[in-house]
Amino acid sequence: MLGGAQGGPLAALARAAATGAIDQVLPPSCLACDAPVSAAGGLCPDCWNRISFIGRPCCARCGLPFTIEAAPDAICGECARVPPVFDRARAAFLYAGAGRELILAFKMADRSWLAPRLASWLQRAAAPLLPEADVVVPVPLHRWRLLARRFNQAAVLARLMARQGDALMVPDLLVRTRRTATQTRLSRLERRRNVRGAFAVRRMRASLVAGRNVLLVDDVMTTGATVSACARALIKAGAARVDVVTLARALPSRP
Image (cartoon, rainbow, N blue to C red; front, side, top):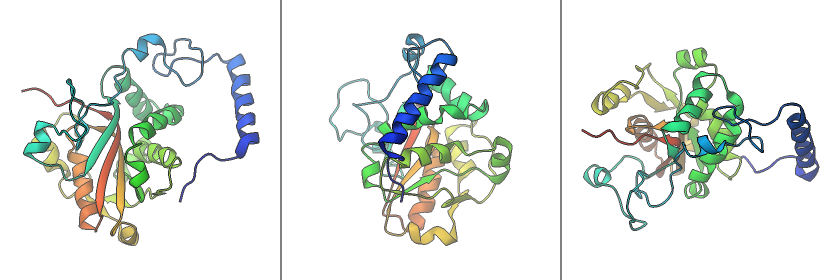
């Protein structure tokens, strides 16, 4: 089980002093564009205006933001038509503008130092879900993709986020049973086919799933095909419920 802050007040003071010393030598810069900012880990005004955080009102099931006021239990048309496999999904911001740039820099440009700030935004989005979670699980990468990228961004974010709660973080609970094509240029239907049956619960971890509430973590939710495939594997293994939290959410494309 992972706890909260580590090291106590003395360690916190030491970290603050070290941060101040670093800022004297290397003035803090914007996370997205490197423009000067007043404090480390922040965004400049231009980039702040280019990131769209998601709050209420939103769909009670998939977390899709609404453009008009709605009741807390209101659901979107797609969830009413085809209820999702998972119970609830939430995201920190839209996958557009500075938000998209930050995620691509984190994943593809080896800017791993972005992780603490991104995880803090993820934790805020997970606030309604994390207290009810027994287990926190990242969406896994295939071993060959993990070798090429050197780290699983979902696992890094999940580990940092889970420190704020009492849920058990299990980075290797899910496994990809086969390598799948990159989802980027696939249609909604092609994405579902691409990841169908591509995930399974690791046998040695199955006892951690049965009868428990699982919080699934990923970096981006586009059509929901990947998290739905993972949720199916978790439910098959006996999960009581599966919630999803992602750093970003892509808006559905219009016909």
